[in-house]
Image 1 (cartoon, rainbow, N blue to C red):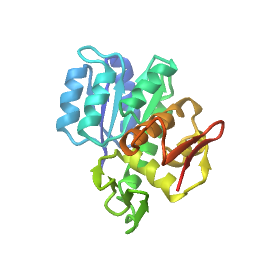
Image 2 (spheres, rainbow, N blue to C red):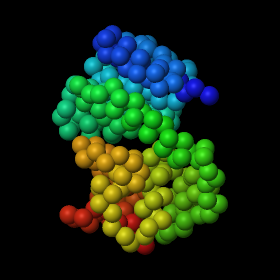
Image 3 (cartoon, rainbow, N blue to C red):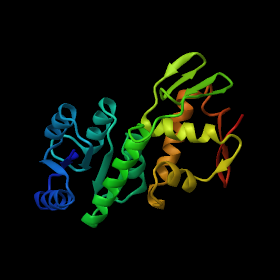
Length: 231
């Protein structure tokens, strides 16, 4: 089955170039040029992946990313001329899976998109059955088969990436992992400019799990080294 993707880009030349490269690689592509039109399509059409430019008429790419992520679990790739770290961190905070700075190689964009599609399928368990087991740690229950998490007997909802990061850390207790190791394990691409997403996701895990996120008891920061899941 052909994967259908949505490209939301107001620069027509760039949008058409991206579409051509994706179609050459066997994808079905929809194009739109405004944030409002993009949101309407994203919410009502079943896309395998969505590419969002940050500077769009009608609605910013940041707001668009946030609204899509609240409604759907789909890979979102940000494409932007903005190269500031604060913009990348904000995008990751809002649920983006990747951030690619213009100008870029269309071939790289396609390669990154394929990688995210493959990992989403794996993380969602489409290629292999999830382990039928649970992890129990001090009031925390991680149901690996159902991909559900219970904190002090209350179910807490995690995104696909958040769950995968939590599962990985909890499956390797008391071991320190650097941000780059975690990024490579969960996101699968060794791109130091995007490692900020690890910090963002750890913070989100703490906010959902910890009684006091500023004094974490589960995911500890080992200064200068990385993070450790304490048991």
